[in-house]
Each structure stands twice: as structure tokens, then as C-alpha cells.
Image (cartoon, one colour):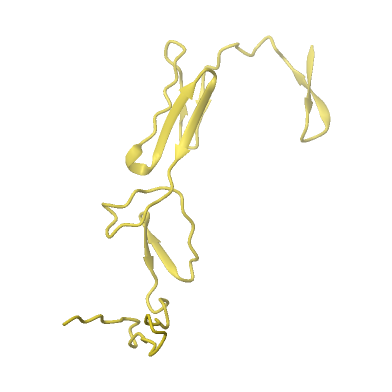
Length: 128
């Protein structure tokens, strides 16, 4: 009978090597499971969701892109980002500035006079 040190409990666990196959037969995922076919397991990213995979030797790398800021959700690249929920809202991966929490004062190149938003938090920039 074989034993393996368990770093979590600090004890030795009994390992029955007779029932463990040398090739994994099932891979458990967050949702569902995967079973290799002819000893091949595909790890496929979805670039439209900001995920890609690559492999070399015995290493598989899963890369998650940084998100980008664009005018619409269709143009923006999804990815990893974090935001203060006090100032931002998030719907289906698209982040918007929460109403009334924008910049409170803008200074001009000369520093004065300051430009204040109206009661809705809007600033109108009018040209001639």
C-alpha cells in the first residue's frame, strides 16, 4: 500500500495505485466534464469573449485579455477589468458610468473659470 503526504491536513493519506489509471479518463470543469478521445483533450478559447489558449510540451496556457474601452459593447473587447461599483454599473460585460457620479468640476487650460455640470451631471460643449 502506498502513502502520500497531505499538505492540507499534515497527515499521510493511503493511496491505492491499483485503481488509478495512468491516463486521465475524465476532466471535471466548472460546468460539466470532458472526456479525452484517443487520448486528446481540446482546450479551446473564444476570442470574442477575450479568452485564448496555447500549448507547448506539457503546458497549456489560458490567456484572458484585458478589456478595452469603446463607444459600444459591440466594439469593445471583453476581458478582465475591475471597477468601483459606487461609480460604475456593469451589464453583460459592458461598463457604464453611474448617473450623477461623474466629474464634478472641469478646469480649462487657463485653470479658470471652472466648468460645472448641470443638475443631471451633463456638460455641454458648444462650438461656433
